[in-house]
Length: 71
Image (cartoon, rainbow, N blue to C red; front, side, top):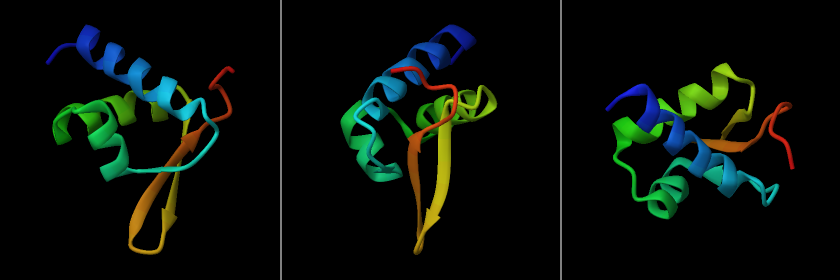
């Protein structure tokens, strides 16, 4: 794993989030076919850039577009 790969994975997640809905970690994992490590790295990248919102919904996390995620 390198920065370029993490950035590409983050782009794939951002494209999924453009539908405006909330996604669970498992839904993102299935839709992207990324490993858990790759998915968490990409989520961290997006969180650092304020492109993803992370919410705690019951016992799991939910992910949606952040303030800097452009449509």
